[in-house]
Image: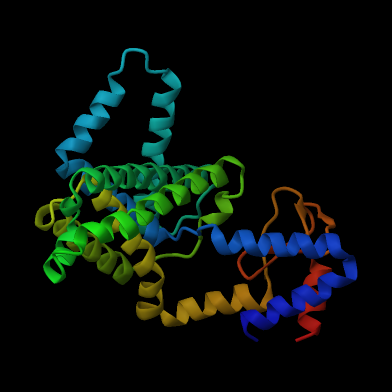
Length: 304
């Protein structure tokens, strides 16, 4: 049974419980489509990219040092930076171990991923907007365009390319807002283990992209980091399917079709009937995100 058929069964089953639960299911589906899910490999590649940029970029180190040495800097900022560093370190540590992540560790890793992506994305977009306004030919993509059509390059910059950094800023702000409102939680951190071949391939890809951006194109550090993160997100799922197809297929089957039971350390709400699931009862997870009770899960399975 494919995921589309499961979604149809969930939707059809939810009609029995009224329009409120149907709208709740639709809301969860929309949130699940737009909100990111971070795998161990993508977090590892993001952490590696951040370390490479920090080590090789003088402008990033000087900006960070200037930020930390402001006389009126609140001590809470330093606490957040420590938590940020813990998330970075845990993102590297957990890719080399099979130990289960705790809730606090997941939250620290999520804090690192959201903050690094959002802040660096905004800085990269503001930098692109600044150089595109003052010197349109300074952006490396536009140098390629300039070779193809030198006369049309400035007009293309002003009419098209400025949309991209503005849209990126909007996405970064939405990411921060989603994290602040609790739409992105520790559940967005995947528990799927990463294989050694994935780690090796991800490290090589990250290093290669960083070298090209940093030393060939000589890009601004935030742009370099953002490009590395984009490829980290793109390649993380592909590596799992290429190197470990059996493991990925098994994970999709367990999560997508059967409804996987998981330990409950607090009360959960069934996404279909709305009933509270107390800790002694085991909730089921369908399609990686939808939490249902045993009765709803059995009804879905009976309609296959």
